[in-house]
Image (cartoon, rainbow, N blue to C red):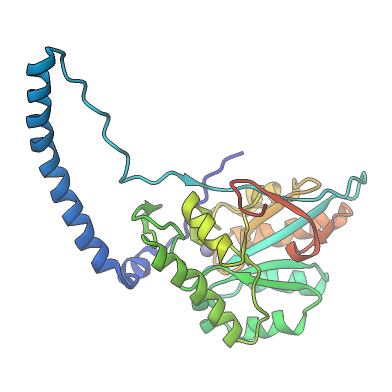
Length: 293
Ligand SMILES: [Zn+2]
């Protein structure tokens, strides 16, 4: 399965305009770090040539440290299987990153009484009070969880992911997570227990940090809509192929994208096959990269 999780189009400008607090400090820190790197070779050369002269051994250059590129992970999440034939258990999860609400999907969830877990950002909440009311009026269907404040990747080192600047520091990761939760509480939502960051990528230290804040981190096992950039037919096929224990990720914030049509159809396909739909709060789960254990 393709693991790539494409970011959503049309949002790059907004991300780059909104630099997280502390970014300037980071940029200054990066410059001083660069200066230090420039100074190190001179110092090393002097030390190495002195050592070589003494030992007559050719110096071996130490490999450069990969301090600039944090190792990113995109964790998987699965739920406990039903184990019953013809009765697959599937968790549908939807990200509401920013933008609007996709009524094609929302109306199917409500009319067919399909439970789902929705990851909302503070940004999305601000602009979609009507959809929020639908979620809040159907507490038996919708579990609302934290997708962050400004949809900034929750990585604590500076890195660009799909062209989006990461939070870049532990302080900025904390702000992204806490800012999302604060907006949810202010909107009348119960305190979130799950977090999923923008782009669904993290580094291991940010995972540890978010876990220490009391969250489980929501990966997925089926990338349903490719960041809402896939066509309707391929989206429908991917989601309708979900198996017992799968966690499907797709988007509920792009009403103009073709993918949403496929999502809505796939929900009906799965229901017709006898699928049991569950929310993350209702079942046992297994996430890799220390995201839930
Ligand atoms: Zn998102």
